[in-house]
Length: 68
Image (cartoon, rainbow, N blue to C red; front, side):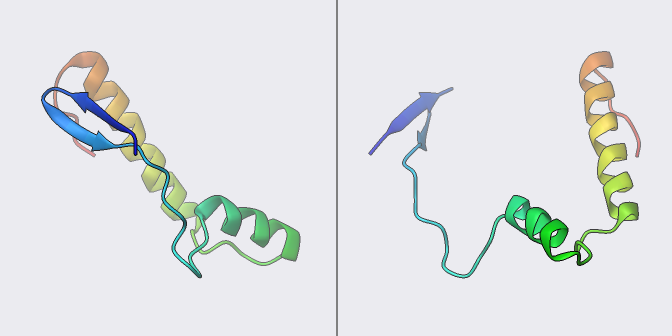
């Protein structure tokens, strides 16, 4: 087993087998493209995620809370 310590906390870095029947979001994305079927996440949801990420980066840069 592999553990690391950061700021007095221990983290388990061991690779664990995937949960049976659960596919990653990347697998789902590729499967949707290859099968020609829609992805479960909509374009509107992607825009919301991008707004949140932009706010996180701006908040870190300006060292202040940013409203979304």
